[in-house]
Image 1 (cartoon, rainbow, N blue to C red):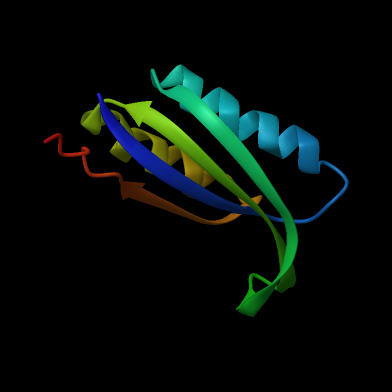
Image 2: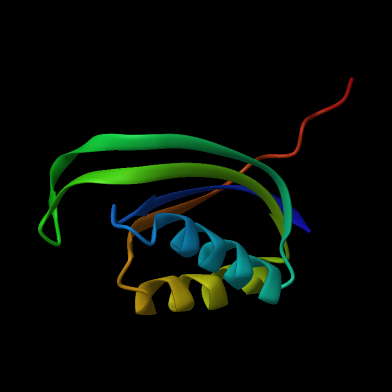
Length: 96
């Protein structure tokens, strides 16, 4: 299992909490362990995405098998309420 930071930008609408739960469901369905979640809230986007000027940001620390990342990415692309997402692998800490 590798450690990743996942940043998700969701479309701001009345179903925001439902969309956040859908993201968690996709992660859990693919065998991901959610370590922590930090909701940054609504922020102005640098440029317009799909007609949106603002997005709801969430940073999630996860542990996942490497092969699950592509499956999750494919499911995120099918969901129109997810404007953008980014997986960043966290390097393992070196011990002395």
